[in-house]
Length: 387
Image 1 (cartoon, rainbow, N blue to C red):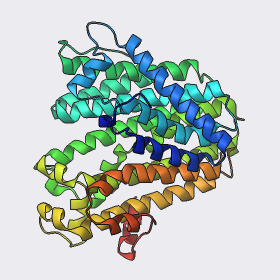
Image 2 (image 1 turned 45 degrees about the vertical axis):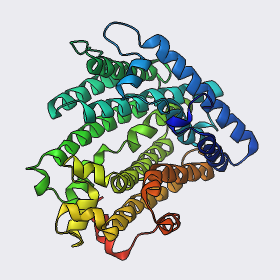
Image 3 (image 1 turned 180 degrees about the horizontal axis):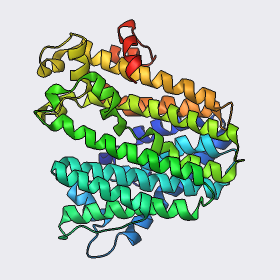
Image 4 (image 1 turned 120 degrees about the vertical axis):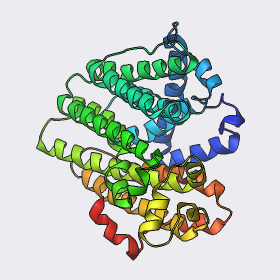
């Protein structure tokens, strides 16, 4: 992480903050050093791997994707950091250092494939092209199929590179965790759900269909774009590979999936508040608009920009998901050899990390103070029936 420029959001203050939060997750100095070393190793190894992997006339190199703007230098260390803070609490008690590093690298490949392809779809693709790219990404992970896009324009080559990264996940499932039959099957089913959720987000950009959507549609369909279940899916594959295969273990798996699903879905609401102005400028109505209209706080979408109440309620709707997620994670620790304290701390760091854009954009410091404690107002309790 130390090699990256301050322009990429990894200035000394940011790195110090990341280290402090990592120490909070690790708990002990020994675990902190292990986590920090693992993140550093994963980040450097993966960047080196991209340099050798992404070669060929149909592929965009790491540098070419940086130039196109769909990749950023911070993505690799950020991905390694985020992969580690969830994998370490889940696997450190059962996995070797090599197995832990292997899982983190597989998660980095998955995260980068999703993130960069999402950037390509948002910036360059039509709805039809975006749907096609998602299908090819899913085919690479599920079936190990790698089909390149032609002609070899910078965008198509970058898309091909994303699909190749997705293919690494398929190879990891087959070689690193060959005995994880149940967890692998569940992971691939969750991947299909994620792809369907991504397709649903395209409805937000359709001027005709968006008017017919409600916050309930968002809660039940659009927010399935959350990556929580597939994020923890690879950890569960390694866990099944290493742990006893019995009813208790699989009960814990289901609880972890639900917990991560809710926690990660919470981040979508925090993101929507931070991205509200940008979304509206592109004709996208996000959860701030749908919730504000449903609660009678807004009459027109553009009123959301000046409605602090609508934004605050959206943050608390995220908290509703977050708190439900934590309850599942606490329950899961009764069935699996996970480090519960470290796991809950990692979720707190994840919550802070995903909400940071909102903090930086908010001129009112009281918003930050208010955010520190998760809470759900009575007005939002009815929405529990839809999540």
